[in-house]
Length: 190
Image 1 (cartoon, rainbow, N blue to C red):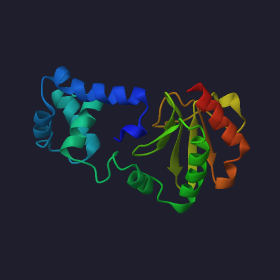
Image 2 (image 1 turned 90 degrees about the vertical axis):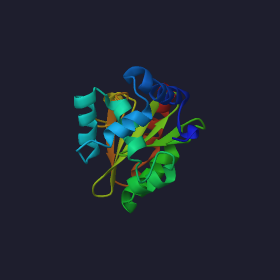
Image 3 (image 1 turned 90 degrees about the horizontal axis):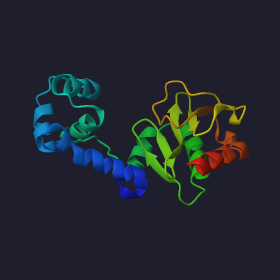
C-alpha cells in the first residue's frame, strides 16, 4: 500500500504484521505461499479458513499470505483503480465525490481505499463510505448516533468499530452543511 495513503499508526501496524509472520509461525512468507498453493479451496474466504483450520494461521497473516500467493487484479498500491472498481456506479460515485471533497477538507485527512469501502483518517479512522445498490452511499462516522437526527447505529458494517454512527445518502445534494459539520466533528475526534 502506498505510504501516502496510510496514517503513521497504520504504517506501523502493517510493518508489524509483515515482520511478525515468520516470528509467529516459524515459516517465511515464501514457505507459506508454497503451502497455500496446495489448498484445495478456490475462494479467498475458504482458503483463509483452510489456513486457520489446518495451519493455525489467523486473519491478518492469512491475508498477507493469500495476497502474496494470489495477487489481486487491483491492489492497494493502485488506489485510483480501486476507487474506479468500488465506485463504478455513476450515481453512487457522484455522492462519493461530494463526501470525499468534504472529508478531505482538513489538510491532514488521509483517504484509504479498501475492497468494500473507502475510509478517511487523521491519526485514526474518522469516516468511511461504501456503495449501496441503487446509486446510494452509506456513510459511517466516528460519532455517537445521537449526534444528529440523520444518524443511526451501524448494523453489520465492515469498517472500523470506531465508527458508531451511519447515514444513508441518496444524492450529492445530501452532502450539505450538516454532513460537512459531522465530518468535521468526527475528524476533530480522530
